[in-house]
Length: 193
Image 1: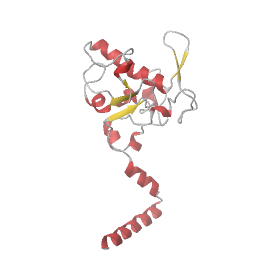
Image 2 (image 1 turned 45 degrees about the horizontal axis):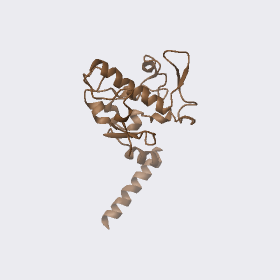
Image 3 (image 1 turned 30 degrees about the vertical axis):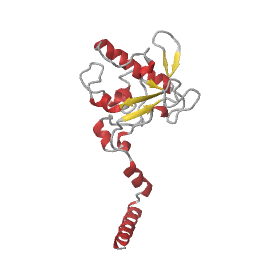
Image 4 (image 1 turned 45 degrees about the vertical axis):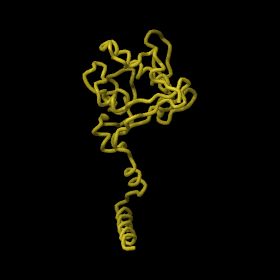
C-alpha cells in the first residue's frame, strides 16, 4: 500500500513538474521506449517473391565486412541519409539527408544515445514499393542509369539490390575468397519461410 501511495506521489510531482516546464508526457514515454541498441538481426523483404532476407546487422557493422575487408561497414554505407547534406553530396548519386538540416553523422555511439538523436529513417520511408508514395519524400528517388540515359526509380527493391549486391560484388573483387553473395546469387540471401 505504501509503495502505491509513494508511486502516486512521485508521479504527481513528475506531472506537475512537466506541466510547469512544458514537457510533454508522451515525448518522455516515447523517449524511454526508444531502442538504444543496434538490432542483431533485421528481417528485410518479408513479402519478397523469393523469400525474406535475414540480415546479420552485428556482423556487418562489427566485423571486417567493409569492401576492403579491413574493418566494419560504416553506418552511413547503408543509412546514407544519416549524415549532413554536404557529406551526402560527396557520394553521387546520393542526394538526400534526413532530416534536411542534419548536422551529425550516424555512428553506433550516436545511435546508443537514442534513435531520435541518431535520426535513423526506415529505408521504405524514401524508397517505397513500386506504386506507393514515400513518407518522407514527394516521390520515389530516381537516378540516371550508369550506361544509358534511362531513369531508374529507386524503389525499395532497387535500392536494396543496388546497395547490398553492389557492395558484395565490389568486396568480392578485393577478396575473391569472400563467401558473400553477388548479384546473381539471389537465394543466398532470400529464403522462403
